[in-house]
Image 1 (tube, rainbow, N blue to C red):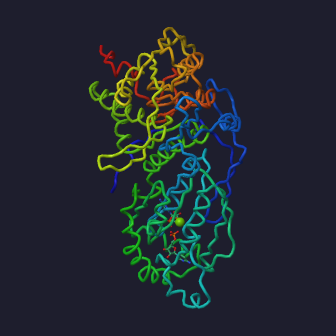
Image 2: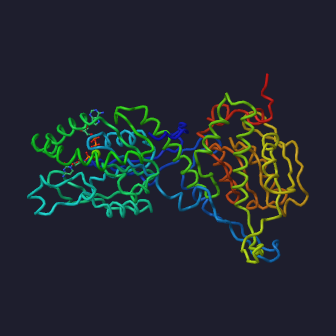
Image 3: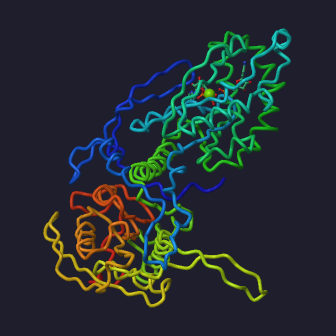
Amino acid sequence: MRELPVHLAAFDSGFFRRMFYEDTRNDDRCHHFNRSFQLLLNLEMGSKSVVDMIEASSQVHYSGFHMNGDMNGVEPVALQETTSASPDIQRQPFVIGVAGGAASGKTSVCDLIIQQLHDQRVVLVNQDSFYHSLTEEELARVHEYNFDHPDAFDTDLLLSCMEKLRQGQAVDIPKYDFKTYKSTVSRRVNPSDVILLEGILLFHDPRVRALMNMKIFVDTDADVRLARRIKRDTSQNDREIGTVLDQYSKFVKPAFDDFILPTKKYADIIIPRGGDNHVAIDLIVQHICTKLGQHDLCKIYPNLYVIQSTFQIRGMHTLIRDAQTTKHDFVFYSDRLIRLVVEHGLGHLPFTEMQVVTPTGSVYSGVDFCKRLCGVSVIRSGESMENALRACCKGIKIGKILIHREGDNGQQLVYEKLPNDISERHVLLLDPILGTGNSAVQAINLLISKGVPEGNIIFLTLISAPQGVHVVCKKFPRLKIVTSEIENGLNEEFRVIPGMGEFGDRYFGTDDD
Ligand SMILES: Nc1ncnc2c1ncn2[C@@H]1O[C@H](COP(=O)(O)OP(=O)(O)O)[C@@H](O)[C@H]1O
Ligand SMILES: Nc1ccn([C@@H]2O[C@H](COP(=O)(O)O)[C@@H](O)[C@H]2O)c(=O)n1
Ligand SMILES: [Mg+2]
């Protein structure tokens, strides 16, 4: 069994609460939602609709910087964005494939996931809907038809329906009738944030597998599957028990062994006992919520860039968040993560095209880095990011800002030392934690008051609370935030949750007794 994703932190699903209604027909369940859903924000945002927020942020959407005059007449162009905030990626729904033997409990598992994802727009698509309708000739010899073979499904139709849903279009999906062996009508399925795709042979075709962000295999004992099948086919589908058993031994069992079981290896998560396995379902739901939390913020704010997560990055986060991690390891892994954030941040700077001659005498068409740069660290934690910036940008000037926390909400600027020509530079603002956003707003306001154009500021941070993201992105839509993870939220003391404690104390070793 492949390993479960390690980061399964809980997400405060109440944060984005959507009004919806549910439409349940036959075995296909479609969860539609009222488009005029509300986004309830607490803390400093007050109560704002998502429409307000999208309007505020959509006025400015830069894919790169466009400066005139300070690059020797050469118009800078944007670097390719490499983070999860690229618009195409943002709009894509989170697709979960659920495969497993017939009557293993796939639909039941999907139902439980849908119930728990009550705040999200979710749609369930069954592979059963894409069964080919039988011809009259096939109907006459139905007992010789193999419904468990990959050819029994219209996979091209499934792929085209999924493609439309992924592009945000509504689609008509056939309704298959197990009694007549035909699809006559269809049902309209609206685009949504999560698509659950369920069926016995979903992992068989590599094109279908490629659609999935997460693959789950429901692993239920063969006897249990057979018992449930007999019960289901005799009661719901009006079949004789002898026919059910014949079909099982002739087609269902061999197809399970030949086509379904071999696809178990593609699963990210294998659930024993199906819907009875509440622990596995809780973990899956938490993971989806974490993913959706990040997707949602990136959808609302095009100026937020969350680094694409990998197991390396999650592993580093796991270490620096662990309260038991030694200072030495905390510094080592924080430094690695900081370096990644800094490199991503630099990727958002403008560049000029440049050609060089290689030792082979050939011409290489490349780019020249932006040179009018400076860093500004927010004392004290931000200073931990200076080394990474210096390592990437030789001789870079670094200014400092000290903001004193007064009570929970008040933040006072008490010290600043910035380069005199800062208004002519692109500024990389350094602070590893974005919490309420109050310090960040103070720091950014100072930079703007010194003449730095908002669009020339890139705020680099290791972790960001959604509340801080809302505050900063809404107030400064031209600024870019680059972060490595979005947190669940803030606690009553305005500390980031799950967070990593006092970053400055852990990094500089001042948390010792
Ligand atoms: N954990 C369970 N305990 C008892 N019955 C179950 C359980 N899970 C599913 N079933 C029943 O078994 C049958 C098949 O389950 P279903 O979820 O439809 O499986 P699948 O979608 O894999 O064919 C259904 O009648 C369902 O009610
Ligand atoms: N007309 C049909 C079509 C399919 N089957 C059987 O259904 C099983 C797949 O459905 P699940 O919900 O259990 O995944 C599969 O084993 C087919 O044999 C059928 O009996 N009649
Ligand atoms: Mg099913």
